[in-house]
Image 1: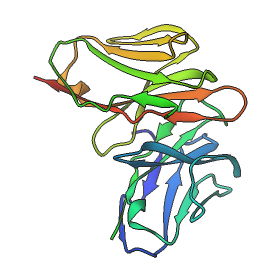
Image 2 (image 1 turned 90 degrees about the vertical axis):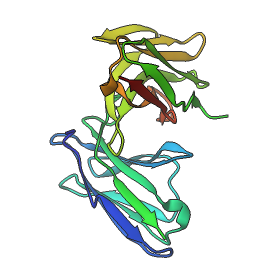
Image 3 (image 1 turned 90 degrees about the horizontal axis):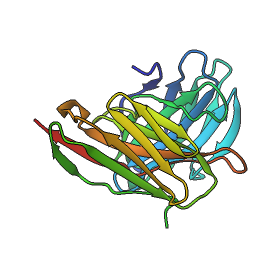
Image 4 (image 1 turned 30 degrees about the vertical axis):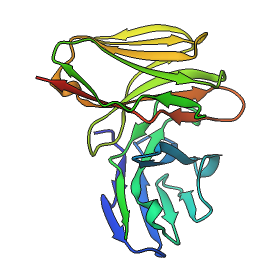
Length: 113
Length: 112
C-alpha cells in the first residue's frame, strides 16, 4: 500500500458528461501528479500541483482541469467526456516538487459509454 | 518519434531465468532513470532509480544506464513467478523544462 488513495475505483458514465476524480496524497507529500493510462498510449503525464499551485503541465486536454486544496488532496475534473477518454487515471505523490520517486495510488478506471 | 521507447513484449521466460528489459531514449537532458513495476489492476511502484550513468544493484535487480548510447536496462536474476508484471522505465530531467516520461511498459510472464 503506497499511502495514496483515490476514489472512486470505477466510474461508468455517458459521453458528454462531467466527472470528478479525487486523490489524497501520502502523509507529508506536497506534490500531486495526475496520469492517464491507456493501452495504446501508456502512462501519460497530465498535470502536477505542488502545495496548491500548478507546477507542470503535460498532455492535458482543455476539457480537463485539476486543483489541489489546502488540505493537499487533489481533484481532476473531466468534462464533455468522449469515448476516447476511457482509461485508467492515476494519481501519484511525492515529497518535493521534482522528486524522482513518485508513489502511485490504485487508480480510477473510467469507462465512457 | 517518442522520447522514450520500450518494447511492449510480452516476454515469457521460465522460472530461474535472467530477464533483460530495455529502454532507449532521445532526450539527452534526462538525468534520472527509474524502473517501476506494475501488477495487473494496480498502480506502478518504484523498483529502482539511477542518477546519470552507471550500474546499481538491489538484490536480484540490477539497473544499468549507458548515456552514450541513450540506453537503459533492468536485469532480473533468478526470476520468480511473482515477478510477472509490467515493467515501466521512466526518465526525468533535472534542469530546464520539467519532464518525467514513462515508457509504455514491457509485460513479463515468468512461468513456473
